[in-house]
Length: 312
Ligand SMILES: [Zn+2]
Image 1 (tube, rainbow, N blue to C red):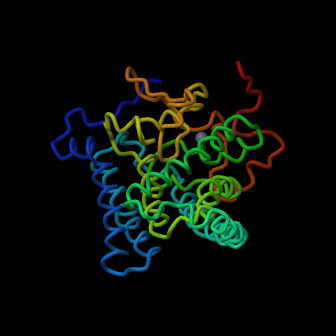
Image 2 (cartoon, rainbow, N blue to C red):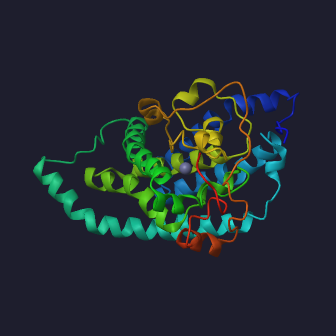
């Protein structure tokens, strides 16, 4: 099958700007809107983050996908939109909120204990907000990296994670496609250390904006050429390889927001001489409905692979 290459061989100046500067421009603006919202306009923190995510994630990114696509065919609904919508609604709101509430209640005692034993809060709240955000990104990323790595190597974890790898196209909306049980695991390194360290609400809000917009960008069908940023962040040029059907390509680039731990642990992958081929799981019969995704990990065999599949 010939490799379908994107895009507009001749792209106009505006598309070139989006290709080179789309991510830094959108992310900077979204973080500023969030920050101004709670510092200058007294908007409640969670609302300021939500506003930025709605404007720059849910509204702007699908427009950029149409304006400057990586692969035009990935903009066509593959019967997956409703399923992804339910994933976004349930997993990213209900599951996340319940888990955060539960963990906060459980860990609040240890936070108090830590604060008394070290004579104050461990989190450096006196640092500038941007520096605190990067500290939170680096700490959270370490746990995320290893849980994601394990999700590709441990068979029962892979069954859960296969739901996330099941789409045959990449677009902003499948950033939220996770089995709820896996989401609970992935949340732990983003919540537990920061409750214990006493991280402030401002940093947590900026992290929410960064994490959500980055996740949508990472899975988006926007043509990108981000140069040196590909050695810091885990963006589409890297993450497409992670969704490749070829296991030797998808067992790379485990980074969630940052790619630094892939560089440190030798799983960084960014070949320049070719484009990624087909996306998704080896089994073309993998369920597409939301209920199908909920049940898939508990099937008698690992259905991410076709019947009779042998590893070679
Ligand atoms: Zn993965």
